[in-house]
Amino acid sequence: MSKKLFRIYIAVSLDGFIARTNGAVDWLDEYDPAEFGFDDFLDSVGTLIIGRNTFDQVMEFGDWPYEARRTIVLTSRDLPQDRPANTEAYGGSIIELVDQLRDSRNGDGDIWVVGGGSVVTQFLFGGFADQLDIFTIPEVLGDGISLFGRDAGGIKPRLLASERYNSGVVRSQYGLHDH
Figure 1: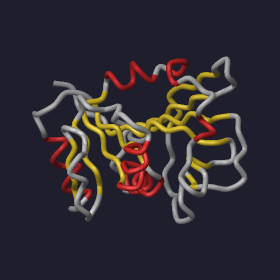
Figure 2: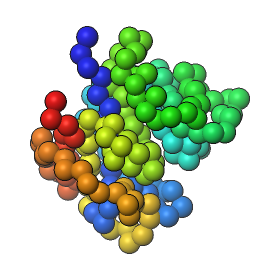
Figure 3: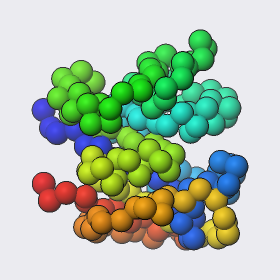
């Protein structure tokens, strides 16, 4: 059994934002995720970790796109009764959650740390993320929710690969550990 990786796979504007100030990601609508191999990436994922605000926002989009995968929502509040199958709330320690998922024999695939910004920051700067895929979108938002908070710092990712797509998007893939 291969090691499960904690992966951050995220789009960011040219000026470093993952969403508008109100959480909207409409600026991504004109970009086709298929161009960036999103389906192949999703096929490699067995579990999603998602923050409550991001979960609520994705729920507003309509049909839940990750039905077949275990989804862990980081929250201290109860989830709605009509939540998607395989979705659970988790309000405990991130360290304990990471240990449980790394040791788990249940479920195949990597763990996708979906977001939002504070979840990404906790996993990235807590040393729990293994790989970071940033898709830099050629859009300048001017303001919004930053990928990295003001207090973020101190990591030195190792560039593994980069790729430019026809749409002008650039993917930068980083390793976050030496193993």
